[in-house]
Image (tube, rainbow, N blue to C red; front, side, top):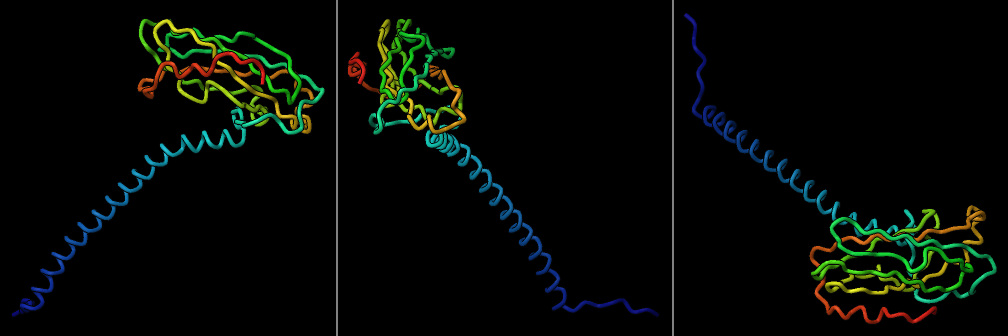
Length: 218
C-alpha cells in the first residue's frame, strides 16, 4: 500500500512565504519598470524643450542654416575694397495683419562697411498686435560672416492699431570672408525676414519703438 508524501508545517509556512514574496517582488519589479519608463518620458520631454534654445544658440554661434551673428561694434580692420550686393526680403506669416517691406530692395556695400537700412512695418488691424521676426541669410554658408549690430528682430514688436513704424537694421559683412576662398565668387547676399504673430506678447509701452527712429548710417 503506497504512502502519500507528507509536508511538515515548517515546509508549508516556507512555501506560503515564497508565494507571498513572489507576488511582492513582482509588484516591486512592476513599480521599478514604471518608474524607469516615467523617468525616460520626462527626460525626453525636457530634452525636447531644451533642444530649441540649444539649437538657437548653436545657430548663432556657428552661423548654421544662415543664422546671422551679433556684433557690438564695427570691425577692427575696417572696410576693404571688395564690394558685395545685399538684397532684402520680407515676409509675414498667416495670422499677423501687418504690411512689411524693405525701403530698398538691394544695395551695394564694401565688405566691412557698417550700413544702416530700414524696413517699414504697418499694423493694418484695428487692434493692437505683436510679432517677432525670424531671419537668415542666403547662401546659408555666409551666416557666420553677416554681423548685425542692431536689429528689430532682437525683440518682440508691439504695434498699435494702424501704427506705421520704420525699423532699422545695422550690419556689416565681416572682412574675414575675403580669406574664405570658397566664397571668392560670391557677389550677392540675401537677408530675409519673416514676422510671426505673438499670441502672448510681453507687456510694454507701445512707445518702446521710439528709439528706432532714423539716425542714418553709423
